[in-house]
Image 1 (spheres, one colour):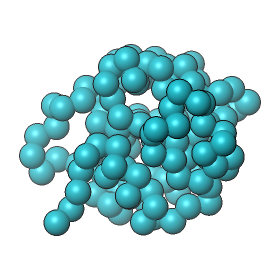
Image 2 (cartoon, one colour):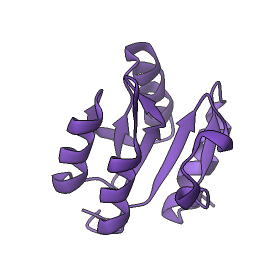
Image 3 (cartoon, helix red, strand yellow):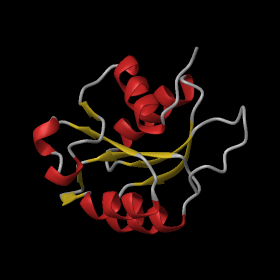
Image 4 (cartoon, helix red, strand yellow):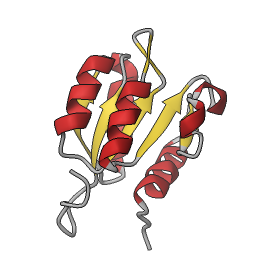
Length: 127
C-alpha cells in the first residue's frame, strides 16, 4: 500500500505488461534505479486483482495489455491513491482522457525518461 515504505527501502512497483521481453527490460531498468518490481501482471484481470491487494508505491501500466485497455487497473489504482505512469507505444494519444495528467513514457524509451516519470509519479527526487 502507498506510504508504508521505510526510509531507505526501494520504491516498489507493480508492472502491468504483456510482452515478456519488455517486462524483463523494464525490470532491469528499474532495478538499476534502485527500485524493485514486487508485482508483475501480464493480463488486465490480474493487474486489477494486484491493484486491489498489492503492496507497492507506484505502477507502470502498458496501455494495451494482450488486446485489452488497461483503464480498469488505472481506476483501481486511482481509487486507492496509488500513483501510476503509462508506458505505451501509442504515446500520450493512447492514454485514456481522464488520465492524461499522469506521466507517460512513449515506447521505446530511455532509462532517464522512465526514471523521471517514476520520480514525478511518486514525488521522489534524488539529490
